[in-house]
Length: 317
Image (cartoon, rainbow, N blue to C red):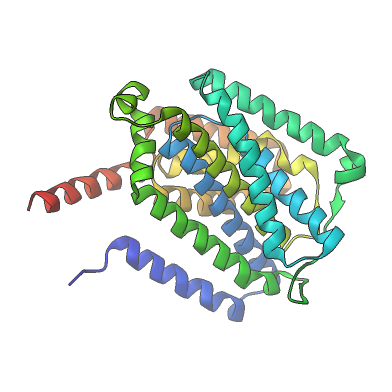
């Protein structure tokens, strides 16, 4: 009989808390929880490209913004079921992510980071300058999302759908990590040459990792459009990418549970620092540098090693 692990207990407790919350808390708390679940999906997407594939990409906020604007524009123009607009944002982000993945075939490490950073900055310039589509520096008013005639006009109405989508993306990430595809991504992360010697198509792995990561970010943007009424390009800049990167690094590179824990912790910190935006980047930078210096593998690195040793011992038995 299979025993309950810590992860199983954590999932059970988390599910119970999420079930009880709508009956016990105010609208603002539900907004924060919705936002944390969006951050979880964003962190899971960055986990795929950095933690699993080892490709240092800094364009996550751009794909997040593409997901938000795509979902918002489709909702305003045609009022389809929000599932359609979210999928459209995810697919468009995935296509652009696949194209950006070509950079990973010719660049590595800091050069890839700088190239993807440049793409992110270029996309923010597009969001700020394309007045007729995005509203430019005035921002864009979002229309309520709909599903079969049911309009989501507040955080409580959006909450169950955000929870379901976040749970689905978490399940997809765990399934990917445990699959043969996930093993191939980790082989590419460790060594391109060794991966090619094993018969792995390194180019396809890198590009698909970018596409999947971008799709996660686009879907996170669509989720955000379910409970927000306004979006401004300033919230889609490099600061957002640094925030999500900090979540993944502090939680633990290559750890799904680390990405989730980091997203929740730093999502709460970002909300607490909402009134002091001028020092947010400094605080995130200090935390990021501290972990890179003193605990580069993150908070969950030791647990990952223990789990791997336990799994190896069980296999030998």
